[in-house]
Length: 419
Image (tube, rainbow, N blue to C red; front, top):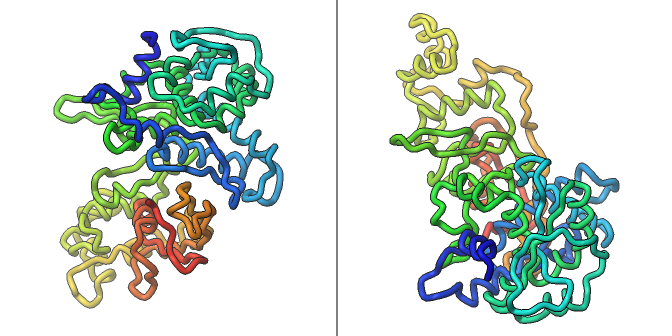
């Protein structure tokens, strides 16, 4: 195994105790990008683990289907459209991982000619391949390769321009679909980004990108695919903590990222979403004085909230607002009434309702074990209304990290699963 090969393996898989990566873990990650037969623009995930790669690819793929392709039915695309949109999506993610367009792009591929066990990842700039795989590629993709054998036969193909990259990715469509397509694409992103560049961005470079026990992808891996940067945090910009610089997100991505972990208070201030409107900023500031998310604050905190939002905060005016916002003298200020008073009829980037589609690539998490979208309607009511309450599912709690008072009405009898 070459030094470059070993560095990639160590970065992704770590150095497991006991002498190697478990067979079951490697098997779970050994799959290609496969479209669902029931939903032609949805990718399938065979087992737990590779969702860290498949889900970001699915997000960019849907963005491209919706906004970059012609046709009225984004859910029913032809085989040729599947090929085109998947390859353009993979190219887009690779381009975002490249630090600048003057650097080369690298693709991890299986060899196109007879190879031996001593083959390693090597720099090469081969002649353009045809769109069809060779017999050797097909045989290797179908072969039950073990962890060591698979990593010994990978080759690195170098492309100098974006045009060369897009042509090469398209020509390798069958490789991406075959058994090791997900891993080969992940390695391509890593090689294009640069191993040292990734190590410099990860908070703890000793932690592998794939958990050695459960097989889940790390936050750094997800951020790398979504934003092109392998930082370990999801807040805006960098932060200082006890003299340590903690790196976050510096630029909005073209697809969003929400996590159930925020609703569980394991992380806070998710990035990758649209800039705040004044009313959204007011809601966020109000909620910093309402850490339990009760939807109200003591009236004694009203002056502090108004000061934090640069509103008029003279004592006489604050007292007047207390009387207006709390006419019954209960001693509390409701979030909804506060927003209606200070931000009335403000144009919002959030509509009152919008369609939502839930995707889960695991067959066993879908009705009748068919990977398909679940359609619903989201209602954004601006404040908590106990008369309008649907469910308390993980899907809803995840969306509430962006829209705190959202309700979901699904067209199916059961709510979709995040698991």
